[in-house]
Image 1: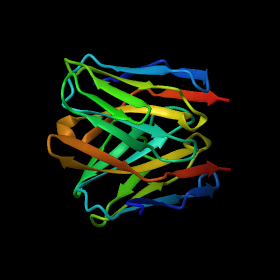
Image 2 (image 1 turned 90 degrees about the horizontal axis):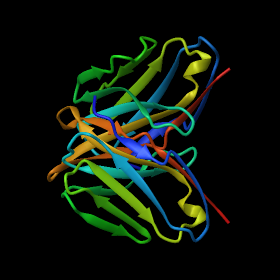
Image 3 (image 1 turned 60 degrees about the vertical axis):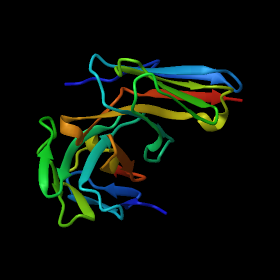
Image 4 (image 1 turned 120 degrees about the horizontal axis):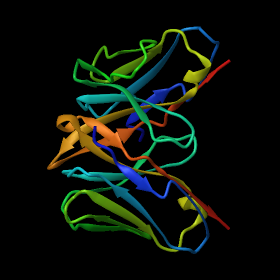
Length: 111
Length: 114
């Protein structure tokens, strides 16, 4: 079974701080996606990374896919309370139909 | 516009009373999934359909069943809900796009068992 390990599991920071969330696996992925889930809602897709070494930016969020396509990171600059949520990295296994979730990172940004 | 729609958003059921959660999609995607998610944890896959082909996870309890009468609709039936089945239930669809697969989630149904 492929596993996606995320770290840290929990993160509580002050508004304006920077943070990085990591997603690691022993397996190579053809692609990897990041989702954010707010309390009581379904996960919302943030980005898909496909190419090893790829970097994508979404406003204050920077996503990187490792050169070997086994790991990914999400960096948030100047965090805001609206960034609070559960961050999930996700990839597809089982011939491309089976979603595998990372273990999740619960982020809380306080004023 | 909502593309994966789950109804109801909140469901309260009695211990042991059968309950059905529904999911519909306007995306015409082949694959549909049901996940169970407990507080602040990653979602856990219960089963998925590729078209009409049903794929059950090995550790999904027999208490959970699913139906997919057509491409657009998928149902989760819990035959005898226990207190431990209280959770958020997420429906998702996926499509193959260029070189990767992309998933879309509904807003979830929060199930409470009393």
